[in-house]
Image 1 (spheres, helix red, strand yellow):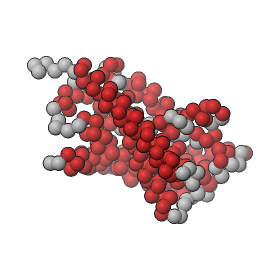
Image 2 (cartoon, one colour):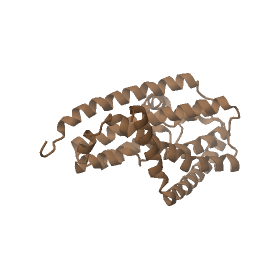
Image 3 (cartoon, helix red, strand yellow):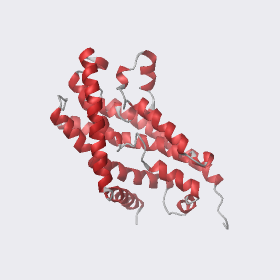
Image 4 (tube, helix red, strand yellow):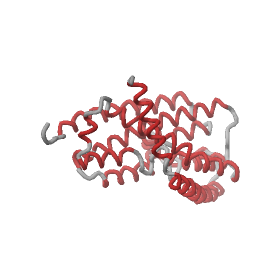
Amino acid sequence: MGSGRLYVAVAAGGFRRYATYRVATVAGVFTNTVFGLILVYTYLALWDERPALGGYDQGQAVTYVWIGQALLAALAIGGGGVETELAERIRTGDIAIDLYRPADFQLWWLAADVGRCLFQLLGRGVVPFAFGALFFPAYVPSDAGTWAAFLVAVGLAAVVSYGIRFLVGLAAFWLLDGTGVQQLAFIVAFFCSGMLLPLNVFPGALGDVVRLLPWSALLQAPADVLLGEADPWRTFAFQAGWAVVLLAAGRLVWSVATRRVVVQGG
């Protein structure tokens, strides 16, 4: 099997794997919708008091909420991606099996995460977003070009997210139990991606700094593209830049980490 076909097969396997958990998917859709409702009513009250807060009107703020709920599971901003399994395989020693696969380790896990991301986007993301667009005064662009640019930004966000979480998973080589660093990473991701509040509303230097960090490429960047508040090409360049840096860092850390692997008998 050619290398390209191999990774496509891995991605397809990742998609099918998550597609088997139908009850969990329905529960996830319900949870995302409920949290979306909580946030959207909070945002409506906030934007009633502060119109044009962060440069958004009320409709854009509502849409931002539902974009966040659509991307939460897909980008594993709150966890649930391959980093958990990767850390567990390191802890148990099963990572040794991965070293014998005739495939690039980083690309293998990236393909698996892409499959997971695509299913979560379709399975858990579409329904909450459609619900919000139908029942709230949301801003929904009508031109296909904006939607195409948004999907490109989401794809790049998925790679940036993987790059961050790959490093988090590899931390288990030194920490043995990666639970603590994963929980810390999820807290940072929630705050710095704009999941709680758009980064545009962060004041002064804090807002300037968080918008330069890689987490802003996860939610804030795609949202601004869909809402017409950012130039798509500059956004793509920003996301792609962080993707390259994170993937390169992950490859370097993996190279160092493999020197720590000891397999009995070989």
